[in-house]
Amino acid sequence: MERRRSPRYPVNLRVYFPEYSLWGATKNVSVDGCFITIDKKINEGFLADILLELPIIGVIALKGYVHHTGTSGEGLGMQFVQVRFAQEQSEYYSIYTDYINLLPEHEKIRRRYLEDVQKGLIKLQTFPEED
Image (spheres, one colour):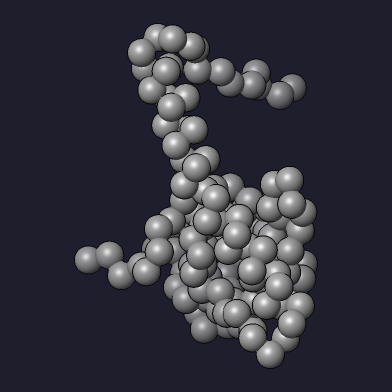
């Protein structure tokens, strides 16, 4: 049974954990949290600061705790903590939620693109392999 309070979107964003000097990327995001793929294990329950790069917007700082680790060790589920008494943290979280709340519109555009590909109106475009 699904226990999530808000929808998840398949979005790949760069993530950095300053405490670990560790890079990762989101696999999916929601208002409440995200799943991050990383190469190092971080224990469940750990409270972490992350830097998250939002396209067009820039890098924001969020705080969250590791809610769970992936079943095959591929990453971790992070639940965000809005720190209401820290004005800067609250502002970052507000920017993040504004970004997430626009994702349904992006999903509509993506679906239209894929439907047009399926109907043969346009071709699915991809980048060539890098050398």
